[in-house]
Length: 66
Length: 157
Image (cartoon, rainbow over all chains, first blue to last red; front, top):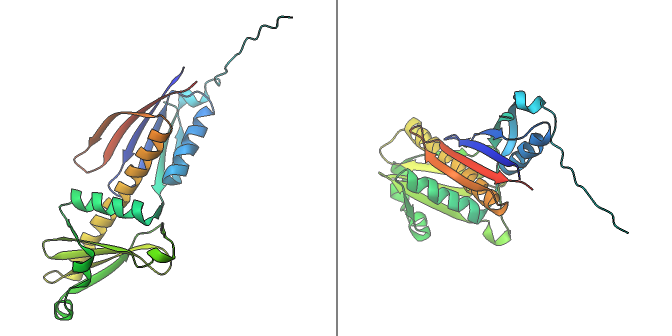
């Protein structure tokens, strides 16, 4: 199971700085969206180099036996 | 690291959640909760001599039912009383009253407390939502500048 990590700083006025770690590709946008729904409005967003790495894929192997 | 973002809080809360944030914020700043009877029982003479400032919490909406419209909570510290309530438009508002302070000082005290209320609201909401989703808070600390730092982990299938 991949581990995700979030560093959250709630400023004294309630602004939230969120660092999302452990995601590759656009999967992290879903995590950001979750926090946006919980906290409020997005003021700024910046993707880091890991964001542009190939997305994660989960492969399932299914054996069919007849 | 994948992404860094800044989120501005929006307070949309039912009265119990909002008043819980008021209690947590007020307590952390050394205020004491005033009972409802006391907050309504201050004499007219005392009110005449006091200054008061009314503020509202931006981007807020206190959701309530018909019965809860008159709900309010008051806190006090060093002769300053701050009463939180829901205004006619549904926004969270506060009235800061004191006898020995000017309007600027009362405004500053009100803004300090209202900011702390928003911070506590965000903290409590985040903690509740993260627990519900099985996120683990592995570190938590309050910095000197009163910001709250959390480190949270989650394992996904």
